[in-house]
Image 1 (cartoon, one colour):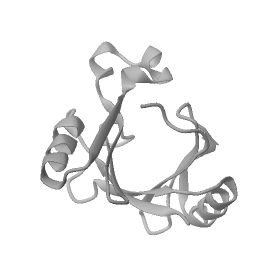
Image 2: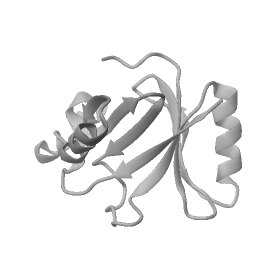
Image 3: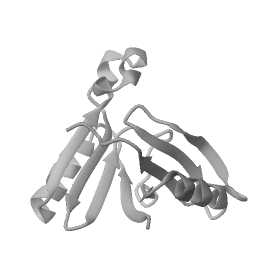
Length: 140
């Protein structure tokens, strides 16, 4: 069964600071992936290399996800989305297809460099969804 994870968007390179604060408040295991750690690094300006592409704070079966790298500037009040971790390829395709009906696909389902099948869609109600099926374990 898929797992829902809150996803928080940050501006002004605040993701690392905020996620570190949340770890202090909530405990758990915190991991970061910066732009320079990805294949996107070659296309990014030097001042964007340390932006957090993906961070996770995990504890007791829940995960808080965060990023500095959004297509639009985060506006306080609408800077939270839903990240859905799917168990298999069939599940992610089925859910993505349903969420796409009447919505807008920002990133179609495709293989991602972190070993996942990943896609992003805003549903017909304006909720941003990021769906991920991790095919191969992420490196630590």
